[in-house]
Amino acid sequence: MSTVLVVDDDPVIRQILKEYIELEGHRVLEAANATFARQALAQESVDLIFLDVMMPGESGTSLCHCIKEDPECRDIKVVLLTGFEGERSWQQGLRCGPDLFAIKPVNHQRIKVLLEELLSPEGQA
Image (cartoon, rainbow, N blue to C red; front, side, top):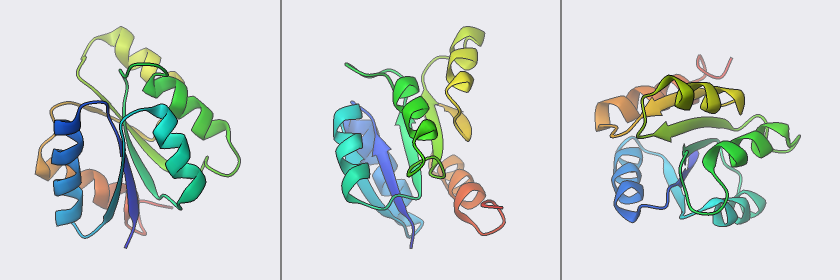
C-alpha cells in the first residue's frame, strides 16, 4: 500500500481526493498548507503528493521546488493541481519540477489513472 499526501487549503477538495485515493487502496495523509505538508514529510514516508498550486502562505509551486531539490524527498512523485488553465500557469507550474500537472476539478477516474501511472511498478521506472 502506498502513502499519498494531499495538500490543499480547501477541506472539501482534500476530502474528495482522500475518498478517491482510499477507494484505490492507498493510505492518505492530509495537509492544509505547505507548513503542515513539510511536517508530514518529516514524519512519514510518502510515495506521492497531490499538491494545490494556490494556497495561502507558501505556494504549491514553491513547495514542489523545495521537494524536488531535497535529496531525501526528490524521488517522491508530485502532481500539481490547479484551477487555472492559462499558459502562464502551466509554465510556472512546470518550472518547479512536478511529475504531472492536473486541472481541477479532478474526478475519480482521473485520480485512478494518475495513481496507476505514478505508483505502479511500470510508472515508477
